[in-house]
Image (cartoon, rainbow, N blue to C red):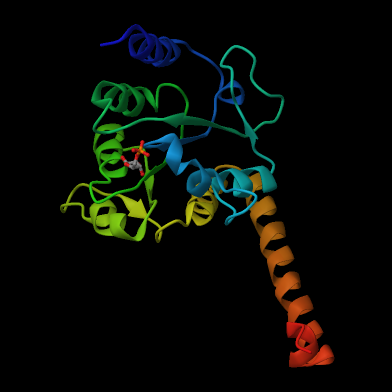
Length: 211
Ligand code: RP5
């Protein structure tokens, strides 16, 4: 094992042995098989919004230091964890997740052997894991779990919805999050109503920008 990998695993294990209050630890962990998955998992300016966008829209803040947590009550963390290239890191991440204060993990991987979500679910059990197939060809690999080994999953690329689902789980314990989810949904409905009225009142050619 390399020093860098050893150090990362050591950090996770040290955090698991600490007794930090829930206010100082991330509720949600986002992991992905490669940093090439980041645009899908986090969202990007050019592409679709993702889990990062959904969580920050709901008032979560990304925690980048365990010793200096953000002031926000609800936080998430982000790591690259490759099931095939760093199996020791996968094991350490999933095994320490609950002790480090995580309540739910969002795990994404691409390719045809997208094993990160399902292996994380098996090791972190009974912590819930939401799988995100980063590509269409990853869907079967992510959702194909045997009976007794649960994993919930979203459609290919839908990390935004995975984040909403994660917050739904947390909202059962935190009424404040339930309020934020309701407010988000009301904004969503208002947006559809605005577009609908605009389309109707301007007419199709003007709305589409046709000559
Ligand atoms: C998967 O292989 C990763 O999740 C990624 O989607 C894909 C390619 O990884 P890189 O070669 O770009 O690191 O394990």
